[in-house]
Length: 445
Image (cartoon, rainbow, N blue to C red; front, side, top):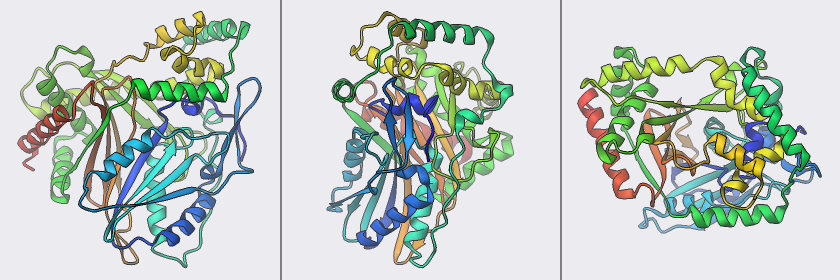
């Protein structure tokens, strides 16, 4: 497998916070040797799990599949009385620095107890999105429980940059602006070295430290009741989630922070590409940010219908591919310059101007709601039982909260990653309680 990384792939290539994490909570005595065998075999099924990124002299990067070591599995003994150990380990993994030029861009940790364990999957955003990790955990658990099942390799992932619908092209003035930036950057381009990336990573996490995770879930009965009520009211679960979290934020944090009304929404573009994409590990998503009005009506479902109407207006093909198309056309090292400029590792007038136009990456969004949808994963793998799937967990310095929502085997899980200095765990717990109270009032959970 070999192709140039472009667009969103490039955007996440060297960012210090490009890790995407999901966990499986497993009941039973997890056999680590069996797990190692499964992980090695899974890398043959999902080809991007066995790549590295080679950077050329001009700064362009390409996926390479030769010379990549097998996946890393760390086994950490766990005392089950320490219930928050999985959170501490996840936060540690969020700050792990991958070595893209060496690969692979995935690593695993088994937090192992006598009867209860957590499998932590940490994958670089350049090769995965949230859906990828659900598919990956499903495959791991499927093959873990069936030693005789033959590994079925999936086809090579279609190249995103080559399969964007032509009808989604960016507006003319965006093309002109990007062309001007590229020309100005070409006059004195900057290619960042490995040592500069290491320095940036260290500085980023020194400035952005103090990350926390708040997690909870609905029971199967609550999840079913929520989904049924949404269907009855003619709204999507996602629209209802946007509504309840907006209301909870405003109730707990107040309305003095305008950015609390801004909600980011990742969107899978797998079904929109020219070439169909199977359930494969790859990075095929886009996102947009929407500013919601302060709810003026008291009825939860009326508010939800108004929010859904606004979301639908934004979900056009051009909107879905706007970020992807803009980044594809930008010079790759100019994309890199954003994060270096933000953390004062680069003093370049073009990069500074570019950063200012895209928003300086200060906190400008209340919450990112990544709702992956509903999935069924085998509950039993030999004598192991899958109890929960948790995540995705991601940290974005310009979003106050990142909410990963996934419904697996009938239970909806909420995982919020946040920075203590911006929004504390105590405040997050109040937001959680507000969400559950409002859902109870609206649905009768």
